[in-house]
Amino acid sequence: MGEKTVKFIDKSGLCAVLLASAALTSVPAFAAMAPAGAPAAAPAPPSAERPAADVERDATRKPTQIIAFAGVKPGMTVGELGPGGFYYTRLLSKAVGPKGKVYAILNAFAAGRPGALDQAKALAAVLGNVEVLVADYPTLVLPTKADLIWTTENYHDYHNGATANVPGLNKAVFENLKPGGIFYVEDHSAAPSAGLEAAQKFHRMDEAVAKTELTAAGFKLDGETNLLRNPSDNRASSNSEAGHFVTDRFGLRMKKPG
Image 1 (cartoon, rainbow, N blue to C red):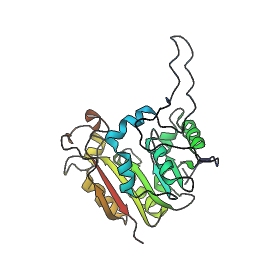
Image 2 (image 1 turned 30 degrees about the vertical axis):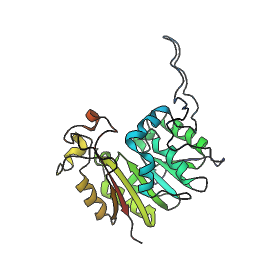
Image 3 (image 1 turned 60 degrees about the vertical axis):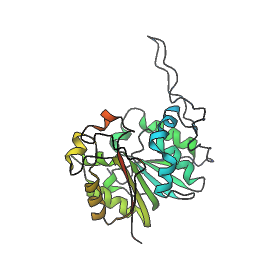
């Protein structure tokens, strides 16, 4: 696949997104289930408001503190690898503001899930400062250099599959950042010295391996956070056994020199 095969952008004004208010009246992601035997209801149009499920996760994901740690500021250009359910897409959109830009970057696998690309396109139209890209990560070329590239709970997955190319991915991220730019990497922690087997077996990442890979690509460790640590987590088990957002997680701020 080339550097970018699909791109969507809506240049309408930025809709308000509330960052971390548990008092928010949420809008459900999908319409109510149809009665038995009736056609399935179409998804409701996306809203700039955050879904209730996202707000509930704030207690364990700590997005306000994490966004501050990563260094996201108004006016920045941010690339988000693997936006998943768009939990952070909404928050990053608000954090960079109307003068900023968020590239929500899906790979071909994620974009190929039924309805995923349409959902991303619709949300981008609502948020206004989000552009959806579909790209092979190791050959990624953003339309403009980013101040920060972001990935949360995905880095271990980049090691899995027959076409995994983490050195290529890290090199592409490095090249798509401005000098002094940041690659923020957050993931479920594996047990010490677990190695790469943990990425496939437990869907966790050996933090020491991640640091080695990232520094090999030219990044310098600029900061690490304990905000998401959970000493009671069994890091030698699957992250899904603990619950995806109550695992012990590391957060690394990796800087491109310059």
